[in-house]
Length: 96
Image (cartoon, rainbow, N blue to C red; front, side):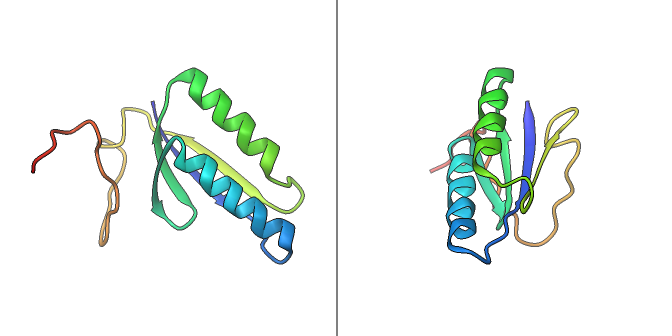
């Protein structure tokens, strides 16, 4: 399934900046950054559960925000992108 992860981590403290790096690294393990605090990922149900639990273990629920959106019908049918689009379809043919 295709998902979109967005987050807003309070970086006013050293601990907040550490959480921000940890959230970004965890998201990189499952997908690709398309904006500073936005990742697009393709995961199965088990991977989604692991990712969600890992992120919830990192964030501070009183200071940070985390959103996970599930695309119904996949990325192609639900996203309109204008300007710079950093998304790479790793399932598409590779042209060298």
